[in-house]
Length: 75
Image (cartoon, rainbow, N blue to C red):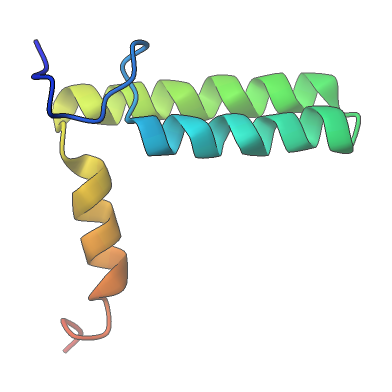
């Protein structure tokens, strides 16, 4: 059970990633008029986000930190 301080939305994906995923899927579905591709993008992105959140609830912050410090850790 997630605590109230975590930013996890009700379907199980982190809030920021769910909003980004929904926005990209809506842009594809509405803007490009590719409804099926937009639904598939949303379904795949949301499923991956829920899977990752169940395995590690802090994956979004770890991913952001990894992307931000990528050059510092290269050999």
